[in-house]
Length: 442
Image (tube, rainbow, N blue to C red; front, top):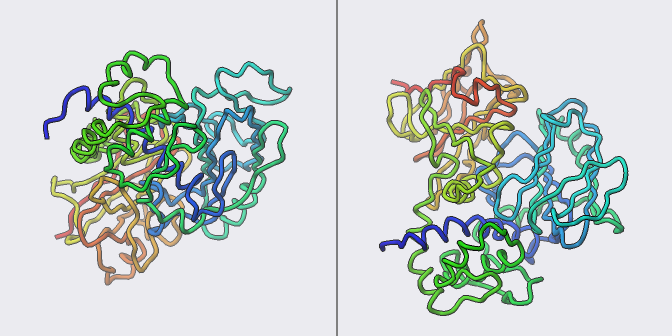
């Protein structure tokens, strides 16, 4: 159908709210999740694999800890333990999915901090000796990343996770717990509008393409997380049913139900929306993670890369085609040639394999080798005498032993490669550093 410009703009502005609410539901509301609840720090104890489908484009390099904060409860105190020189970050995302604050090894060294997290409008003084973190919305997603070298190193990271504490000021510590298998595999669970909002419905069972459900969720989120600069936009979208705190009318719900398939298709670019081509790789827009008024990019990343870090922290480069411009497919075999100098990252780099889902989301591929990424910490990779190496990318297991050691398994069909570089050099951020070539094998 022909999409009205105002409807397109309203969707791009509100979809990140919907996607944050969907993700929040899996952690906070879904009955099958035993660790549900706000202001509760929950730890993932194992690296993400093909079974994890709650959040698109996961990494296989860091262990995550996660908390959905409700700053209406008052100041929240977080403690960061000493991180012993490894990469770590505390990524605070506002209700619109943007990076509101980012504290980690890049700007806070080895940790050993106390953080006092408050809503920007909260003027209460903080105790001495803490770092104040002021955030613009009531609802906040905190995503903690800590680098893991291997399965043995994971045990050390578990101790670091356990040393992180979170408490609402004056309350008992509420740290601990782990992500449930049910929660991490329920990608298509229905979104429920926030139950603490008195106008929100008690339950919604419609699909993500249900226009009435969509409006109820985003209107509830808009009421909880108002942004003064959006007042004029919201007034313009009121005839479309975008009204903070309001329930969808049947007419508005029908309008959105008819339009949502095309609207969803319009943002399938993910982190590569607005990307430029550099040495065969798609370089993301420098505004990823810190979107400003770029609602189109914000919505695209919310669909295809929710939780993406800003470029000074990490760059995400992806390839959908080989060096000759042919689409990547498991029907062919490829060699990804990485020079002796590796990738220009101060923390670490990895090359991950993703299957592209019909809705635009990206997830790891089940494979017999249980390998979802290779990088500068992958044991057993075969390198040339000068340090260069070739990663073998194909669906079937290679015959040669050296190729098996360097194998990154692909799905049978279309796939995407993603090169992550954490704490990238300025040359890498600017597209001036050498990058691997993806060559199709004869």
